[in-house]
Amino acid sequence: MIPDNEFIRMEGVPITKEEIRAVSIGKLRLSKDDVVVDIGCGSGGMSVEIARRCKFTYAIDVNDKAIETTTKNLKKFGVENCKVIKGNAKEILNDIDFNKAFIGGTKDIEGIIKILNKKEINHIVANTIVLENTVKIISLLEKYNYNVEVVNVSISYGKKISVGHMMMAKNPITIITGKKG
Image (tube, one colour):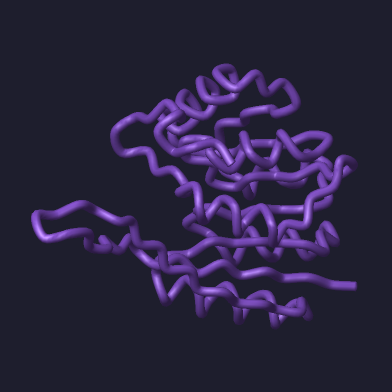
């Protein structure tokens, strides 16, 4: 995994933290033949890591700053097998071919999962912070007959203080995997 501090960052554009990227990449079970879509690519942390491990990646986001940041990070790390697409994922997904999906963020999760199911995407990984989104994604995946696995990851970083070291917790992230077949 590339350390977080090596990525180009832009204010207001989220990045999936290094340890969460590691678990999410593991849950994607990537092979060199996979073509993966990163929905809500943010700063491109997942797009870069996915593209380094598979045949091709599509990075999608509606935010101009996210598109700019992802593009810069792909260039910085020499990733050429990723196409960055600005726009609404619901309007883009039907026009591209891929076999796995990572969902980092979207405002229309119901529409996205419906499209992924219709396209017969049998391996989906989604990261959530908001509990209501976690419940919604699990329900939708189960509605479309995916086998669902849910893992909640809590990361804390050590910080030196006057009397020793203390652990500083980050927001816990829920990683949901939906698989068929």
